[in-house]
Length: 300
Image (cartoon, rainbow, N blue to C red; front, top):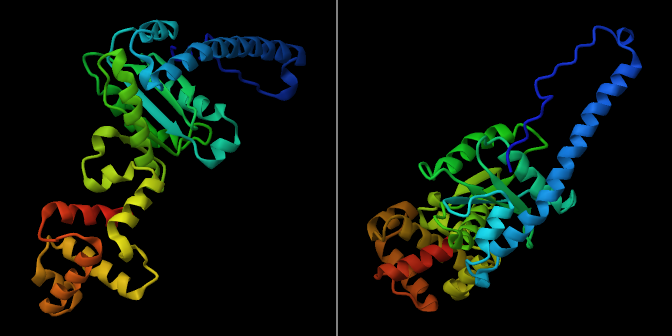
């Protein structure tokens, strides 16, 4: 859908004094605006059905690419890519405002991207997503524009979105499902930042950033199983060993620098690392085992 272009968007109503304008005239002007707004709302409501159908297809991995071109055309979108998918979640306040709050807020954001056609609808698990037709010559333009726009939108209470995720461009309709998966993952990573944030999938370039997109229950389960008994941090001995492990990994497995950082003798560090290796079943001379335990520490 195109951003709203109201025939009254350039009107200014100046009232020198309350008694200088007949009430009837004000009522008639208000009626003109009301009728226009009702028309806009009718068009928006009519567009929600095709948009919901499109997002339902995109959100169904086994649906196949065949129905997608027709669903895209029904939303006024081209049946050829590239496309960008954005997923957002308004948060607890947005949830309380009703299931349409996410979709309406996302629409408000996308209206600030002139020249981009889009379809937006709420997702089954909460939040909303949009499929945005992207300029083939600059497929990354949507992500860049949204990132630039995000701080400004947070200054407006009605348009503020706590966190969202942006996919990489999908070159064809059958890539939209993967793009939605990417946008959801980036949204989860953005949500873990603890502040209003918008994250593009291309930004997840570190182990910490990658793990941030994993759901909390999966992170917790991995940490518990990878660390074994050491995951019980109510035990002071376990907390000591985890501190040693964290310091050891942060110093790239250097025994001397770990000992210096913890004010310990090198032999004590060796002893503690052995106590980490036994219950976890890891050999910290191996890079892959170091990565396993580093990821477990990040998932705590």
